[in-house]
Amino acid sequence: MPLKRGDESAKENSTYTNGGKNESDRNQYAEAIENTVNTRVIMADFEIHTTPLEKISIDANSLEILLDDVYENRYKIFVSPYQSVKIITIDCVSSADYFNEYCFRDGRYHRHILQIENSGLIEELKKSGAPASFINNAKHFVLPLQEILIEVIAFELNVEGVK
Image (cartoon, rainbow, N blue to C red; front, side, top):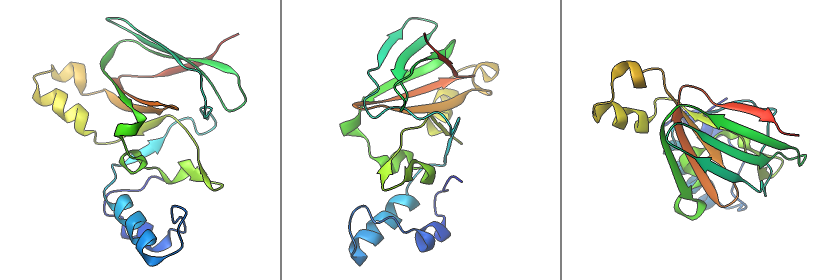
């Protein structure tokens, strides 16, 4: 279940302490939860490998990402058309920016495809003059890879196995 900004029960019920056991660490963690966006995991059974060996191809109409899952099977993530693609080095983002409780389990971070609900990026695109029919049904996807984070605004995202 995704956490929502200001979800007080998340602060009270959380047992994750980011490696620390003191009150200060717990308070920092609770504050990080409070400042996160509302995310949800899509395709919970698909987990991206910690070293996904990604290959990214972008053209004017499509985005294709080849990567490995946790079982070292190769997959293609394909988006066409997209409205926006943003690639950020992982050093410039915090896991709290894209927090979902499901990703933090078994004492480690699991990489899943996320969807941001009520996306600020989609709102920015709407304000920039994008036609309503073009952006109203768009979704904000996030792919946390090893060294980069990819954000995609698109109608849908497809994942298929590669032989």
